[in-house]
Image (cartoon, rainbow, N blue to C red; front, side):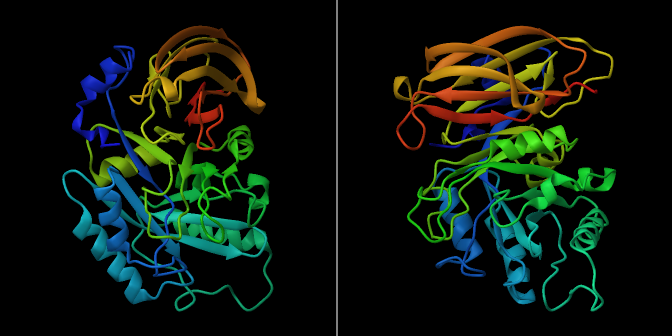
Length: 362
């Protein structure tokens, strides 16, 4: 793979047959979830990770070392290294993975300079409920303008309170949730692959405005190169500010094919958008293309709505497909696209990509 940033937004839109009325964006391929020796990664600094990912063809990479393992000096170094590694053709992001309280799970935080770790934060000594700890964390995050939250490996190290903690503030800061985690902590790469689309559906059904992410969660020095998982962010040009804006606006898709290109609009609105309330008829325009050809051919496109229900589906057998379908509903809250290809990372046919939804305004 070589980065798609070299293509203009217009070229990508034409290649994917996106509707002329859709905003023109370029897809930028990267990974939100990576570890280094600054926490429990096997070796390498964040700078090593950024340089390796850049050399391996990524457009961007975030390192997300565990907050409780990072020293303040290491966190300061991470931010400096991210700036050093960012160029006109590659964006490096400093992030950290927060373990908040037993039984809940974790949140990866991006675009926030302050690090909360054991040295500068601990819960009050008096007994507090898990819900109070979580609420305090999300309030702290929302108080930092522009901060972005991402849910890693949902259901693996806690139940995330079944995503019951929705509030306007929490919805503002939480941008994405993993639908696929390649996993490399204690077993060979691929041995822990986890498909968590059900959690994505649960989040959407509970009102969260989030996009799906596919990540490596690597703890070995193979950032980007060791996993086919990619989170693809749609932005007008490659910059850290534009990628953060794409995350905040849920504008992108998750794929476990390292160069699968996807376009999806509903009534001309790009994935991640919300339509005005009151609409009951919809036109979905979808296109997908894989430059690797017939071996990675697309075999099925599905439109998925509330509760994970498939409301429309079409079979294909081509490396480049497009589909326009009309829908009618006065109940659906969202529609997203699921893509099946002839070969997933296991070499078998399977789901390969999930887009952000377009919300209907209901």
